[in-house]
Length: 294
Image (cartoon, rainbow, N blue to C red):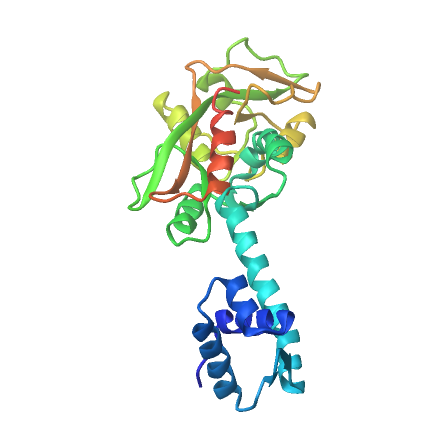
């Protein structure tokens, strides 16, 4: 069964509105025989007359009037769809799907979302809480557009992974503990510890920091939610090692934050698919890039 062309429907509506083949042809910038051909093809497809032709006047049959009504809706929907797509192509609206860890989402993304809400309010940001490996996997299979991942990462075919920012890893210690001005592996390894779970890049990073000094401490508890870890530190349950972003508010007064000796850094990268980048995604990338020094 042949499909009905939108061009043929547009011709039918133009003839019905102007009650004239000649006037419809002028309005559509078509030759009069082409208008007649469009109507003939529609009538053949429908299997019934669509227009009544009288001297000096053309009007729809009952079947034609019903098709004209439906055609107006179809043409309006098609125009709206094209307008919506054009707005997305121009970056005026659209969607960007982003994956990141809980810590990044809690402490870095709010700044980006505030800027995007001000300058690009019609872009819908969809956020998924994922590990770096999950993020890269979903970028590769096309179910994410942007990933904020821990570095270093093994290169992935088809993905761009750029260094984004680095933040110092600090010791977060209950305020009532006596602790040195700079925390060493020897000192903190002897304390009760609350650390990130083994699935995270931060866990491997801190384990390497301890191991370089010959220590392999066993934490009291492992979590993958930095704010929950800080709450336990505030309650005196133990100390922890966590990144500290410059724009993040100072911790709870029940917690003191100390630099590490030797220093340790958490490095993050921005990942996205190579090749064409939709404008809405590019707007989000631009705003995130501006946070690299925040």
